[in-house]
Length: 364
Ligand SMILES: Nc1ncnc2c1ncn2[C@@H]1O[C@H](COP(=O)(O)OP(=O)(O)O)[C@@H](O)[C@H]1O
Ligand SMILES: [Mg+2]
Image 1 (tube, protein in one colour):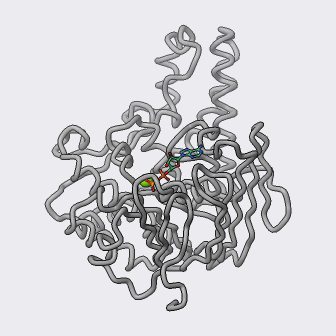
Image 2 (cartoon, rainbow, N blue to C red; image 1 turned 180 degrees about the vertical axis):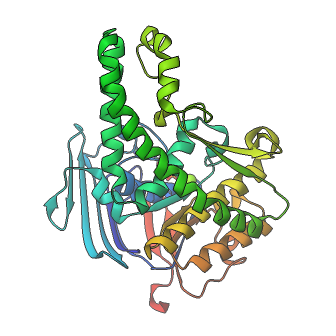
C-alpha cells in the first residue's frame, strides 16, 4: 500500500516538499530539529486526522502559514490508485478530498492508509492509559472488519443515550436503553475477542524473533467482570451508575492487559524491553493485517537508533523487510541506518533545516 508521491506545505519547519517515495524502504536522516519527525507527522495527519506528537493541531501549523496542505498519491494492492488531498486552514476548517470528491469523514482516508508508528514514545502503549491499548486493538479490528466503524458509532450512540438517562435519573427508562446498549456492546466485544485470538500467536512469533528472552502474555478484559453477563453487571452497578451519571462498565472500558509473570509488563520490563515488546505488537499487527486483507501496512519508525540497540534494530529491520511493506525510518546519522541494514530496495532522503532532498536520486 505505498504512498508514491507526497506533497506537504505548512507543517512545522518543513519547506514545501514534493517527494517521489520508494514503495519499500525510505531512509530519512538529518540533524536534530531538521524536520524528520515532521515528515512522519504529516503522513500521520493524513492517515489518522491527528498528530502523534500533539493533541493541538495549531502547533503543527507552521508559524506564519495560513494552513496545512498535504497531498498523496497512493497505490493500494486491493483498492487501486487514489489521490488524497487535505487542506486545514488556520481557523480550523478542514477540507479532505479523495480523487477530487469531498470526504465527510476521516475514516475513508484512514482506510486507504493503514499506518503504524514506532517512535520514542510508543513504550507508552504498555505504561499509558487503557485507552491506548483499546485503540491498539481497534486499529486491527477497524482495518480488517469493514463494518466495525459503523458498529462502533452505534455503540457510542447507545452509550451516550444510556448516560443521558442516568444523568436525568430516569430509572424507568433504563431497561429500554439497556437492551440496545447490551446488543451493540456484544458486537464490539465479539470482534475484539476474535481479533485478539488470531493476533496472539502472531505476536508471540514476532516477539520471539525480536527477542526470545522476553516472556509476555496478553489478556483481554472486555470492560466488565468477565465472569458475569453484561446485563447482570449493569443491574448490579445501577445505583452507582446513577450517582455517577455514566456507565461504568462496557466495551468503552475494555483493556488489553500485557503481563510478565502475572505482573503488568510496564512495571517489570526495562525501558528497552518495553520498546521491543511494543515493536513486536506493532509488527505483529501489520503482519496479520497483511495476511487477512492482502494489503500492507505503512510503517513509520522514528529515531530508530535511540529506540533499540543494534541487535534489536537489526532484528526489527529484518522483520520489516520480510513484510515487504512501505517503511519510513528516520535517524540522525545516515550510517546508523545504512550500516546495519541494506535492503534491496530503498531511497535515502536528507533533511536540512526543513529542506528535504533525495540522496543520489540518479542512482535509483
Ligand atoms: N509550528 C512550527 N512552525 C515552525 N517551526 C516549528 C514549528 N514547530 C516546531 N518547529 C521547528 O521545527 C523543527 C521540528 O523538527 P522535528 O521534525 O522535530 O525535527 P527532527 O525530527 O529532525 O529532530 C524544530 O526545529 C522546531 O523548532
Ligand atoms: Mg525527531
